[in-house]
Length: 210
Image (cartoon, rainbow, N blue to C red; front, side):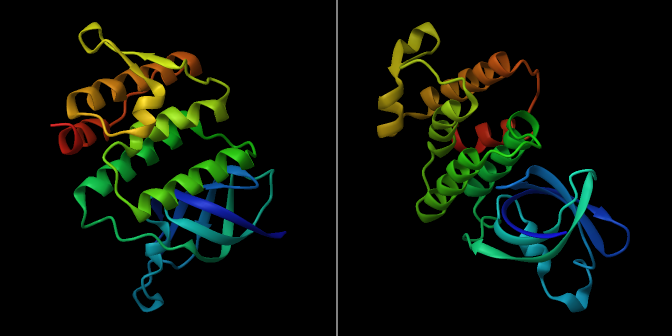
């Protein structure tokens, strides 16, 4: 049955000669996989732009909950972000967050409040680049997962204690930002009981924290 939904593009793999299978976090259905037909045909225009990481989309999909992979009928931007490909700082954040969300956070269960938070955060990120965005995002995300972090985030001893509210309100220096990033990821892994290594993390650290 055809259904309308909003979605956040995460990743895709090539499928047959001209199609792809896209992983998309949808507002109504959670994390889903969709076949997108003929999107890689040269005469179809640049439709692959819709499936770049963290694109915000309006979708018409064939949704059958009994199937692991469904199909997309129509797609357009719900909000068209700036092109991050040519901006290495923005793209490093986007690629990291895609991997973080897909591997550690998102499930196939509906979670509209989580979707709305991510969507709103990405719009804010698009409007103004903030080198601390991923740190703030990881901090603000915890209540939506039932693992809200303590008001005092405990860093390695030589940084003393850094207030959660201070991090959210002000820029932090590069060395503290790097330590907080690792501490937050360890916090997520511990509370969600998942041991995952992120391939994009060394690139993020190299670009933003050095």
